[in-house]
Amino acid sequence: MATEACRSGKVRIKESTVKASTLIRPGVHLKVRKNGFNLQFEVVKLISKRVSATLAQPCYKDLTPPEELNKYKDWYIGKASAEVRLKGEGRPTKRDRRQIDDFKDHYLEWTEEFED
Image (cartoon, rainbow, N blue to C red; front, side):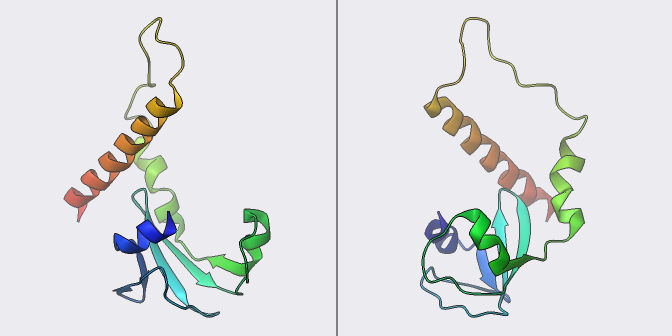
C-alpha cells in the first residue's frame, strides 16, 4: 500500500514526491494524502524491521492540524442518511465491502478536485 501511495504521488517530502525506496532520517517531515485527508508526520526514530502499530507510534509525531482531522466529520455530519441494504440481501461480502470502500475513496478524491 505504501509503495502504491508513493507511485501515485500521495507521499511528499517538502514539495517533491518520493519513491518507495527513498531513504529518510529522523527529523524529516512527510506529507501524506490518504482518503481525502492531508496528513503530516515527522520521523522521530528509524526502525530496522516491520513492527506492530503500537510499537511504531513512538517513532513518529503526528503533526496533522486538527481542522484537517475534523474535515470528514464536518463534511459528513447531518448530510447523509444511514446506509441501507435491501431486505433479504444480508450482510455485505468481503468483495462488496471492498467495492464500497473503493467507491467512497474515489468519491472523496473526486469531490476534492472541485474544492481546489
